[in-house]
Image (cartoon, rainbow, N blue to C red; front, side, top):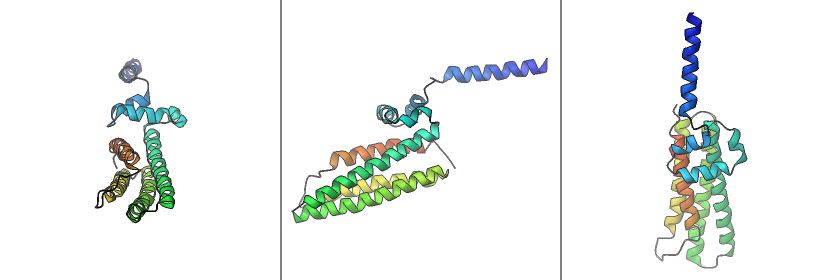
Length: 172
């Protein structure tokens, strides 16, 4: 009789868990992020997300931060090769150095996250924003120039913010 009661309680707990979950882990995770739509679009675009758990989904977003930083670095390197104006060359050199650092810290954030060092992951992924911001600030120094990477840098900073909002949900 006691085992029947225990089984009933377990069944009810399981049923209530299933009832309160939408059944779509991507949506459940993205609802807790700072930007639901961007989160959904980013995760749905990655085929690995359909079989990932919550930690795996956040890792996918961290990997996408790294990819975005690499893409901007490559764009800056190409622009630097074509640049003729001294001030523009200086700004792009600052960007190149900072995006090189962003790649390093994003890689470290993934390693920290994989090792369950969530505090370290929070700190290092936050540094990606600082790198992108320093790049963009270089274009605001006199003589002011228009940054050719401004929209991509802002996109990266927002994406890192979204990712950080989810990394913060894990604790050491």
